[in-house]
Image 1 (cartoon, rainbow, N blue to C red):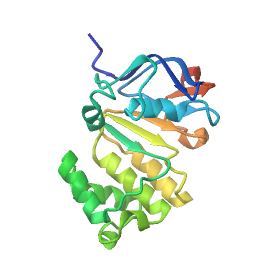
Image 2: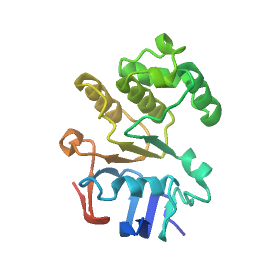
Image 3: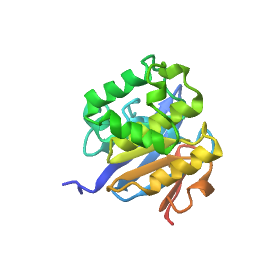
Length: 218
């Protein structure tokens, strides 16, 4: 019987693209309370591993469970437990107001709570409610996606270079928001700026050539 505190279980996963091995016998567990800085050079396999967790990719060998579910066969159930902030925001054609209404209907997260989180990063949702999401600046898109993820109170938060489009002031607000999360969860930060996460993470995983080469508590 799986430990209910285990949010992600990766067991001997391999993934290949065009004959090249991108994930090579990767195994790890991430539990509630883990705040993971996932690091490594470009092409190390970090983003591929996360995409397998989210059900974007099938694994060639091995298995992954997120909140006890198969990310491919039970993707809808898996995504109920995950808040994901991609490095590049998706080309959503809804207006900001329509996007918040969609999130509210699909996840039960109130638009008001999302607007409050956005306001903590100095994004006035009401002011931009009629504007198409894809016409927002990169920083504004990122702030709104962060607000949605945090307002949903997901068991697992995954951030892929979440501050890449944020100015220094917005980054400061973002880190303050992370420190104020008041419920038990696990988090993965794919980052090249580990120094910025000092005090926020308690575990570092480094990947290279598709393998986990370092996994340590800090």
